[in-house]
Amino acid sequence: MEGVYMQVGIPGLILIVLILLIIFGPKKLPELGQALGKTLKEFKNSTKELTEDDQKSSKKTIDHQ
Image (cartoon, rainbow, N blue to C red; front, side, top):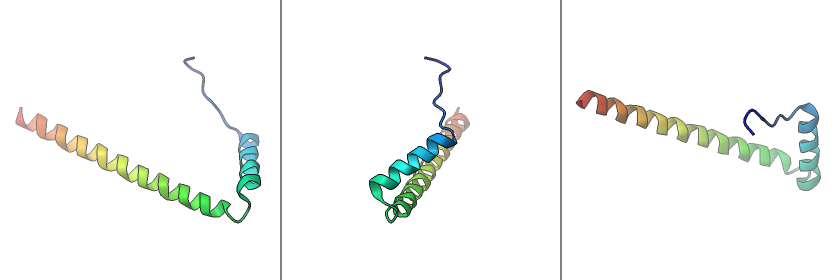
């Protein structure tokens, strides 16, 4: 299965948005989008902190050798 990537084009995105509108309604959709945005931002910040910590610890290890 190498080399097989799932691609979602414009029609796929439109279908997803329509399904979300049907399930959650137009009033809840902005709230869900905002919550998703906050979640992604927090995840990005956490992974950035982890990679910075890894770089600092590997630099200390190299300095001590």
